[in-house]
Length: 113
Length: 110
Image (tube, rainbow over the protein chains, first blue to last red):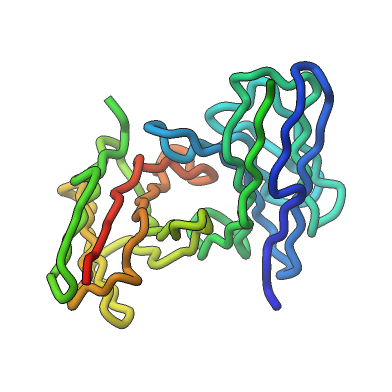
């Protein structure tokens, strides 16, 4: 089944404890992206990747890192999480770019205490 | 002011009603997505359009690029249409990114 998977789905952590949220797609998509969703603010783009080894900042990249070493995986890294990073995170992928159908992962609900 | 505005923010309807959700934007765009977010949180893509109109089942999406406006219509609404509907635009000057509206929450009652 064609899908985007994220792990973990739920995570409660403490300030400063490094964490990684994994994202994987099995559709051979070039474009991958991370978003956070907050009440009243909607979805906002954190980072995106057009291809392997090519990543770029979205609108809210502060406090996050990403890597794209393989086409299928695009992990989101929080080196030192803070409470303002408490949010619902979505990974998405598409065949080539933003003009293609976007496929979203199920979301990861992160709480930073 | 947000670059992408949706109206209404909340919408309730009786089963069978015709629904219209609006998306207006203040920037030049090349295309626009309509997405549906289920009550459980999952997001699915409904349409991507750059001009004119698209139809899929009971859903119709229209866009007027020059007037900076798009609409999503649901004909013969059903309780299973209850969800948050989100528009996202691809800005001409930065086509690698998506900018999202804050969504319209639709509840359809039997």
